[in-house]
Image (cartoon, rainbow over all chains, first blue to last red; front, side, top):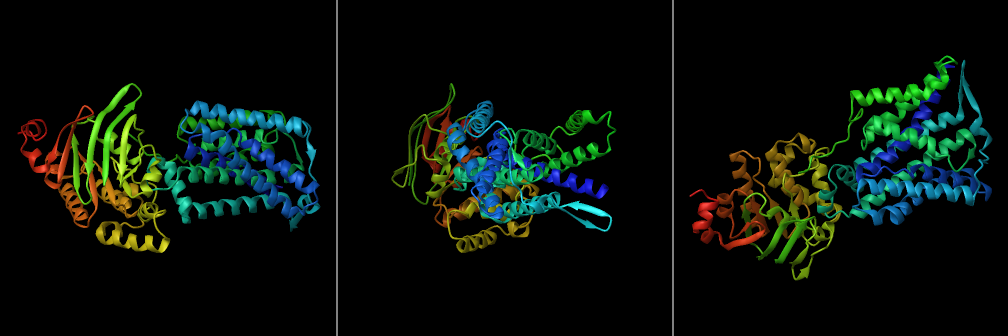
Length: 293
Length: 234
């Protein structure tokens, strides 16, 4: 039972971490909190549904769905955010709200306001046991996928020139441009990565629920936003730490709170967030940013 | 090689640069001197594409570069070493150098260039795996110059390289600047330390309140009454 709860906690934390990381990557470079991040997740969910309805094999459908999330993120930057480049933080924020609302309405009117069932393969809902422990296949896959995604991202950011340039751009974007590295390439890559991560998170989210609806992305991305803030907005290690922390606390409270207090779970979690921010206003692992004159 | 014609720069209502004209010939060191707020850094920023020009023209190698993005200007062979060094503090010395040369040459060539830089700045070889933020001010200045040189620029814009450095280090940095010129690099140097700047430069341009008030050879300026009274404390 405890092992199962720990697996669930880490698995949920992994999804939050992927989403928070996507928010943090874009924020660290463009200074934008992309509230349409949730819609990227929803879009990937619908893409999975469509791919399966068209009869694509499950792994191919997942690939298509994740790619859709990534491409949609790049398109979003191109259409909505690039024309706003250099605008104030408020304008960027409002733009992202507009994109988010627009996509929600498109999903509601174009597809359906009601949840659509996604036919996940049967083995996803299975479980395997080690002696006394029974562990769900879904959460285990979720943990493995999150871990691989985090490692792949780390390798990309450390080893590749574009990844290194992104880390540098998070510190001082203008100086990266002085090195001759095009701003557009860095920004497009940031969105591509955030879309990829949102797509992956969507797969893990849908795998646990076997349905998608127009508001699917809202709650997890709200949580991811909280995770990113707790971790230190714009800090990538912070986003991962915040994501896991939030996921683990949520599941553990869910499992241990007496029934009478259970409805207050979110209130307790958010009080914890306030406490963290009072003690460490820059978050758990603050982002590096150079003071400019 | 570079000419700035009737450059004007505005930050909102404030006119930071009213009119700057200057030319830099190939292989020269030109010093741009003046008090704080005279418009020196803004002028460099406009040449490098970081600061938009309200009017006027910047021509590099016969091509107008006014209004181009900083990355496009960098690719034409103009490298700016910004004021305050602005090295990437969370990146290692190696990564700082790697970014400097990344888009200008194939990887193998960049590796050779990095080796040249480590020859020129032995201190950077010692701290190759150290994060830029952990270097001292002087070491950071070396790194900032080496990072700019990684792109094999034809012209380098140096913004206040002596700022915040101990006197001994200032000498090291200026010896290095002289050495770079001997190697054929064209240099536009912004410097508050006028005596030092005039010592090393071929020609100099004096800015005050966003305008050129005096220009000539470094020798002429060093003996001019205006410069001696206003900047050399004589």
